[in-house]
Image (cartoon, rainbow, N blue to C red; front, side, top):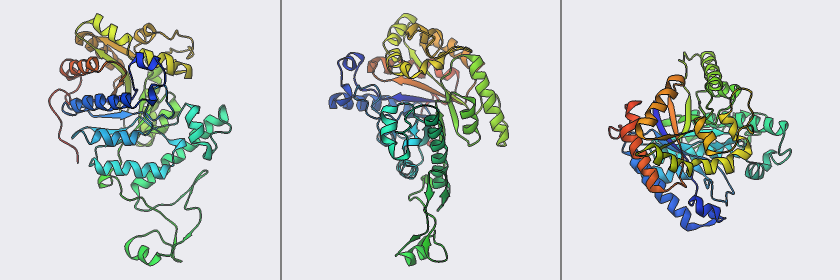
Length: 405
């Protein structure tokens, strides 16, 4: 099992966020860069798989100031030597897929392949509708037609992006994009014919290609957070994308894992239960159970209950027949239902043993809310590294793994 860190790059402590407009403060943003930098440098020397960042815009409140995760990938990647960096994930419907393919390819070259890529449909209309207005997301802006438009754009944009990574030149004719729309007159056709490709018999451009390609033309590992439906999981598994679940009820997740197995079989992959899947939980470890609980109460629950629950994210902890607003938005709810796992090293090990026995996965992403005090976050990481993760994976706690080339 590979273990990575999934950051929501908040700026400011809880108290600083409560004062308002934390996202506009340079001092808090600089502190975020410094503290996450220290955390990933530590993980880089301990065999962790990688670190990923969300994409969100306009978060002047400070809770997820992660405007361009690809730039964060490069920044933190340049501080490290072994880990991979990527997005969990880029919101495809509002992105230009060719620009995104180019940007990730550039980071892949600069980090010599230490990249992965994650894709999401987006759920915050404050920015998705604004940035996606040119592809129709501002109107209808909500409702069933809006969700279907996002899904259609997501799937088409992914297909374009994958073509850009896997072909020297390509064309594409879809519902939303035509690449190119029609043959393009190209005054430098002699140069293109001698040193490139993509021309037809009339010396018009009929295919385009990105440059540079990804490092050694590798397709990065691909993830899809958060996969909450069997339809989405099947779509991803058929395309070699690893779905990331935050669902906590075993009966709900069991249906998702089985859907993944069926989709894998359809794609010619003989998968075991949970193979090709990932999950994410918040983990808080301290010397004692009481200390860990006190830290956890002021960590992820603050962001989750204030900023995620209004969008229906408590569906992640719902059982069969429950809706996203049926549970009280409290730390106790998150703890009892297992989205946040806290305790001493021995306590967390026991909880993870039970979790992985029911729900084995290939990847585990530690949900990290970095508004918690840096010293407590570092201590939690150290205890996880030294006393918890070695019981579940042989990649962590034994020094850095050789860089993959």
